[in-house]
Length: 85
Image (cartoon, rainbow, N blue to C red; front, side, top):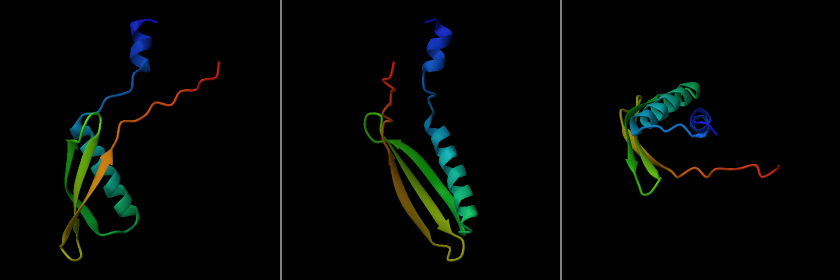
C-alpha cells in the first residue's frame, strides 16, 4: 500500500481547541432549535487518562442570569471492522 492510501486510511486527529469549537457550535444549535434561552459561557477540553477526554461546559441561563455546568467524558473510539471477505 502506498503512502497516499495509508494516509487515507487514518482517522482525522482533532486538537482540544477543535473539539471545544465543535461542542460549542453543536450545543448552540441544539439550544436554539429547542428555543432554550441559554448560551455556552465557557468550555474546556482536558485529558482524563489515556485516550480519554473530559469536556467541562459552563452554561448561562439568559432569563435568570444563573450559570450551571456539565461534564462529558469522551472515551477512545473503538474501531469496528467488517470481518466479511
